[in-house]
Length: 198
Image (cartoon, rainbow, N blue to C red):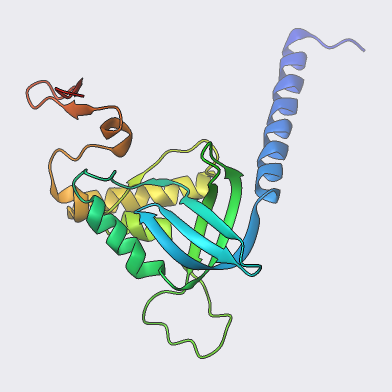
């Protein structure tokens, strides 16, 4: 029995939604994880870890972008992440590699103040979200961040902005992606413009 145009559209939409759900499921199924020890902190969103086989991995924390070196709060952001993870055991969950060869994912760590007498200690603190909570990173809208994480990260940034903590204590904080391109907000127009000399 031939389908009329309206039925065909409904079937195509249903097929599209099914394919979208399958691709989302496949993306989540592709998430890999491993336990490691943090041996370096490059900045407020990048760490270096050693896995159980002593293989070194650079990890770019997904969903956040910390201030760039030379940008206000870059040192505080790095120091915050360092205090949180340096020398500690973490669980890395990742699902992609960036163009620099870093694994992009989450670093889960046991929160400070938890007295854990034996391994494995519960790793319940998402280091990236913690950076957002204290106002030392921006929520970086990534195409691969699932909806639940995206909403949680967005909420953490919104709360930090409302409390004016960290970089949000400055009225004209420039996002790192704009800073990298030499853009700053013009105080008169409120529009982003190229900074002189960049």
